[in-house]
Image 1 (cartoon, helix red, strand yellow):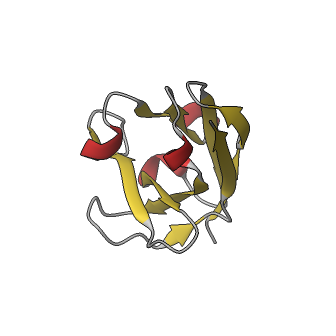
Image 2 (tube, helix red, strand yellow; image 1 turned 45 degrees about the vertical axis):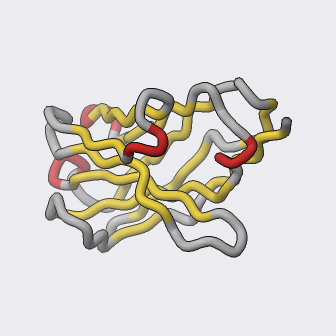
Length: 119
């Protein structure tokens, strides 16, 4: 069973930065493509970024491109999402996900970490 645990969320002021971590256990991390999503209150879950198994390819949604960066280290079984120049509208619960495919379906999910950005 693949187990994902996010950490690194918190409260920051607008313009600040956070680095979210997603540690994976229970399976071989390098087999999985990784993704990051968020969900704000009253809104649908939003895709943010994804990275291939080897890390050679990343995709970041246009709304956060240039501010958010996805990365991974297979030796540490961890993926990260760097959040820079945060805005109040970035406030949400952030989730990581894993899947063997690099598509739009994600089989494994973490429990989420809260990010709150104040103005």
